Image (cartoon, rainbow, N blue to C red; front, side):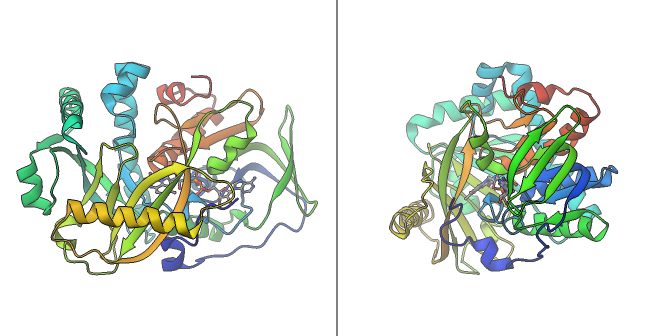
Length: 400
Ligand SMILES: Cc1cc2nc3c(=O)[nH]c(=O)nc-3n(C[C@H](O)[C@H](O)[C@H](O)COP(=O)(O)OP(=O)(O)OC[C@H]3O[C@@H](n4cnc5c(N)ncnc54)[C@H](O)[C@@H]3O)c2cc1C
């Protein structure tokens, strides 16, 4: 399966930071984490530090799935506006899910500071603008709804947006809480740190057979070695969706490109994440090496890969949209790529157990907010293992 087309910016920028051996013996552990992207890195960090004998397995190099292609905007606003989510899961649920997003940005910030890892984490505001005149009323409704429930939001007029960001657009909501990070580097550095303190990691190790028993799970790798564990945690991204009889999410390919370094509006845009209300929406942010990173133009995922022709067409459209939004911006594309992610109808992830897979826990941080959902998974997994509940587990369950 082709996750990226061709290589993403983060992989080119950082390279394969750390490599691990493939599994060449039979092993046993308390918990096997399948997947070494940002989700696997965060979940294995939590488990290893909670004292579980944890093993991380990935069939590819570390973090070379969606986590190497991501734009890594950390926003509490999910793809479904809060007032619409309230219609789907109730007002209380929408408030709790949105607040959990804010909390997860702080949790990630504290984690990377505490672990002293270089991740490019930067606090930012988040600006969502109406993509058309028709979309303004609905966005205003969302603004009033969030303000009523105590979220720190500001309504910006086109004039204010122009003066702050040199951007030509309809009005928008500015939220205080947001951030960005290099998810690829974060995953690598976190896994390396835990590996250095005894966590076992095996890359290029593909598991072919899984037997789910009453007391644990046994797996057999492509090379015939056995991994026996009490619990398995699937942090295997959108590819996990193939395991289920039910269709829980759509898989989408999205396109992204970065400008050359030192583009001229960097000082104005460096502290803000920008996206709009279109479906699919355009999203952008600056990087810590002074580029503008822009994404969007989503299409249904093609499992046989994305052609160079489609990628060029899509990123040319992104370039034109940027020119329309920022008439004074000098945007010269340096790299472009495509990546895939799963999208759920309510914008929420799937985190929890599934009746068809005893002794397995799934942390599927799907959607455009996959990273903040994965952060929430850290605490939720510990709660599931301890037999505790949490309101979020109700909203993120499979049978919702
Ligand atoms: C272009 C793009 C932009 C995005 N923008 C944002 C954004 O701004 N903000 C945000 O929060 N999210 C964003 N996302 C989504 C976010 O990137 C993902 O939610 C996140 O990276 C998923 O991380 P993961 O670790 O769960 O999955 P992945 O990074 O895909 O990692 C899964 C790993 O599991 C491994 N694996 C799979 N199956 C097996 C198996 N059977 N055996 C062994 N290993 C296996 C894979 O090799 C892979 O390394 C974006 C995604 C893309 C593609």
